[in-house]
Amino acid sequence: MADDVMGKAATDAKPVSSNGMGSSVVARPETRADRARRLAYRSRFAAFYVLLAVVAGAGVGSLLVLVGRGSPAPAPAWSAWEPTGSVERRSAQIADHVGDQYRLPSGKALVAVTYSGPPTVTGPDGSSFRVPAIAVRPDTSAGRAESDDIDTLNAANTVMYTLCGLGSACSIPEGKPTAERGQLLRREALELALYSFHYLDGIDSTLVLLPPRADGQAATAVFIERGDVRAELDRPLDETLTAPLTPGVGEIQADEQSVIDRTTRSRVYEYSYLQAQDGSPVMVLTPSLSG
Image (cartoon, rainbow, N blue to C red; front, side, top):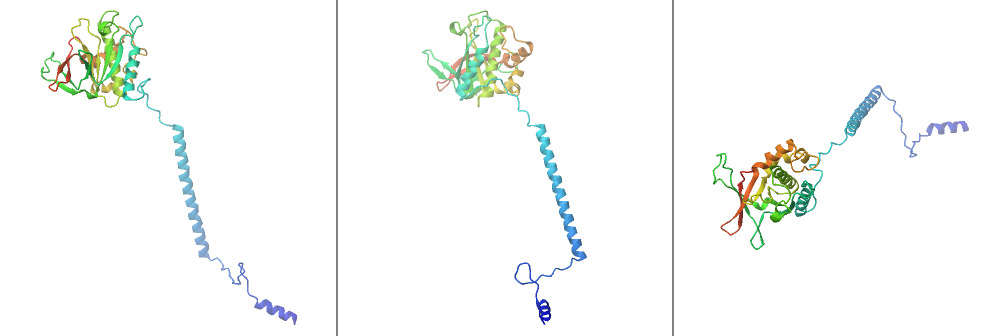
């Protein structure tokens, strides 16, 4: 009797699911199609992971190549020294820096260099007046220009320096005014111009007043426009002025002498002033035949 009851209970019992809710789940045997589908998915995932590994490896390889090459070398500095601060401060620093390098055989300064900002003229009473325009006369000596072919420039974007000797009336008291000394002064004017064009924004031309000539009959200046020295501005300064130390009178080497003559010799002018119709002074530059 007891065995009959137990057998019936076993027959009537329902399978219990793993969630304890009493519902039954009967596992279906895996068919051949199911197995093929499962293997296909597995193959796809394997191929995806292989491709991902290849991409990651290429990225790591590229990174190692870039690290191995390093950063690009910085462009060489245009000059070993450079001014800082406002335009006025930089201009004054350029005047001091360049002026300190040029010496007479005695070791004294060749000239004192002062920065004046835009061109000015000093009146009889000592008052200074700004020059709004510069009139550049042509060189008519070769017959390629007419005397009335005058180029008038706005002086607002011109910076002026004055080279003043330590003698009377800004003359150089030591030695004789030789061609070699004149070339050294033109080298100084060129260096002032190059520094100004490179480090002063908005400057189109430089005017460097030279010490008075020996005959005292005319005042001369070196007037250089930016386009005149474009090639020199596109390379470091020491590739133009190649001497490791600033030369003295008669010590300029041939390579520098060629550059100095090419950039400054035809740009030495005698200067004077005229009064414009509005009463303002106009600086007139006339090519100096003596260079």
